[in-house]
Image (cartoon, rainbow, N blue to C red):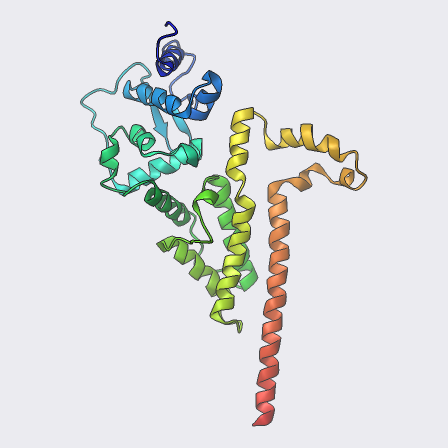
Length: 310
């Protein structure tokens, strides 16, 4: 192809050649939009257009939680007698989650979702009013999938630990989720509300007023959210550089730490994000324990005082 050929067509031709020659086999991941922008030096819109064209040719297909892979046939368009599965809100939301998991929230557009589902953008608007509502539904669906157990653990601390670790696991599984959840303008969706109710039940009956109970829940949830806030940026850095967090720590941070007497004594695995999360969670719950003990002690003193005056 000459230099006048649109960039997206040059990308399509290159990836088509990789597929038809067997360099990329059925089920293999094709480069994501981010990888395409880096490899070919094009804009995100151009990368998306290239993947769209390959999808329309039937050469690739989206796989939830994985990304875009070579289609099973890998040789051409989807046969005309095969009709696309019927759309639904659930399918739209699940497709959006798969794209955000694989490529990040910034790449999520209605056009990108339509491409992955093999439908038109306008068809999506029968199920969602726009991207903002879609992201809200995505977050609610993820929270629903990571449901909390019933019955709850036997004491308040075990319950709050379970809630925090469940949320942490969701953030790790879906790095975009921290960008979709707000604590300044919380979204009143069913499963967001259910999470709050579940956590408040953990401290119900301990002598706390409802405001303190909800503050405990929000404080713990906000701690998890704050720790997870940079997960998507870290995932993007891994994709763009090809360097894992451990490799970056080993090559960049540890050599400088060795120059300082106290820092040099820190084992590298103690800087793992999960380790830092667990340490902070336990200290936070220690503070909650002090608060709860103080409230219960005050309640006991008041009860004794009332008994003395009778």
